[in-house]
Length: 67
Image (tube, rainbow, N blue to C red; front, side, top):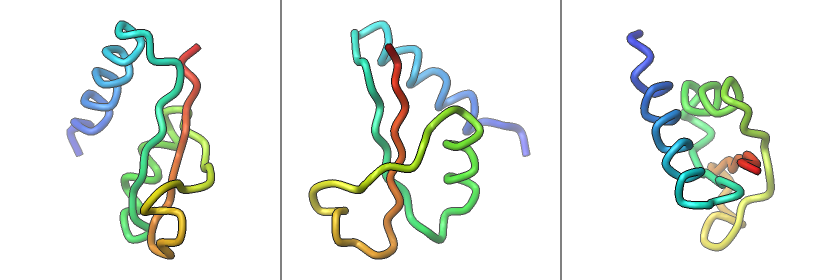
């Protein structure tokens, strides 16, 4: 309830921008409702999963453009 996830995600996003990253892509599980809500509140959009997560039925992936 102290919004620590928001702070950590904002710091990671800011650092990625400083490093020149133009897109962040994250994975979480379908049972991680708070994580999915956090990503969506912060501008991440659902996207197809990749690699080992591509066929994982319990995975949800999100992306956000940093450009």
